[in-house]
Length: 431
Image 1 (spheres, rainbow, N blue to C red):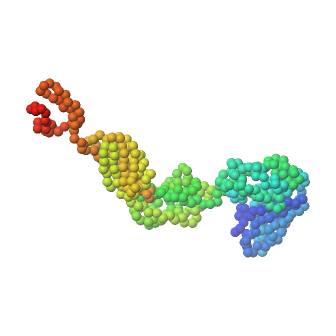
Image 2 (cartoon, rainbow, N blue to C red):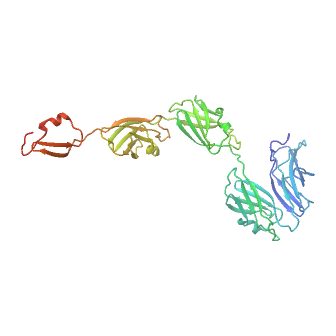
Image 3 (spheres, one colour):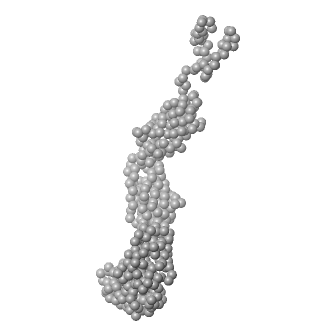
């Protein structure tokens, strides 16, 4: 055992419980796992980090300290030593106030154990019914308290709650709790606490925008320096990460790469990325993906003055294919609705009425297939609706006894109009 640095860090171990008796306190802690551990020492005093008392307790994890003065606050820390008398650093310091006899109870110790568990230690034995009353405890911002447990010493309380948010600051307030003699807390006890994020970020999903752009969605805000470092990404086979952008939300990452090939399986390896709390993805995080051929329009047909038909090269995403804003017509014709058939390839566009014989341009863009691949380039086609209906006479005027004027609904072919054999008057009158 060199320095006991393997187990002991900035928080050497956690004090599990104080068990109070008149003028005394019992301190317990988690054991060290070193094979050459010889024992522990308890340091304590009435000033923080200035201990005037030391007790070598040997190889035990619980010890009762006596001859303490009521009304004073005592501070405790523990060290471990090995068979060569190498001694560790101090543990995390904890403290307790020994109230004078018959004084109102107070909370002597608080620990936020995990996002669903809080511990309280009172300075004296408490009334069990009072301790278990959930309404005596409140958490702000609101977290529901599910249950309250007490141990056999009647001093240690465990509060079970709904899950807290990591990194968010909460305030626990305790009031109206009574000791065995019926004395209530003189003042409410309030403490602020939070749970530090100790989990590395993880990738929730990946979006393939085009053959040179990949978007990554992470579960939490990321550290900009590590995220934008291109060396933290590698793509095989043979694709380079050219630069990296981080969205203002700090959760969305866009990779700009050299060009991928279609229908080739690629592996993206991510490492070294940290969240804003400094938790790093140390192990290689590997994602497999394939850029499939982007969808295209393979057939277009203007059905009639109020409907157009498209056929795509592959099955399309229904939401994307029926989004009206993905289609435009110039000169402007309003698109009323877009339908897709059960094959997911045939789209029918319903519009206001086109003018027969006029040339229009339809543009289609941003439509995605089932795999989320967008059209690589917009599709544009010029079209017009041919006149397939015969003309008809809208109005006939008798100008005089030898002249009749006909008004047709549309421009006429001159040679057919001048052919007198195309007209017949009955009873017979020559034209």
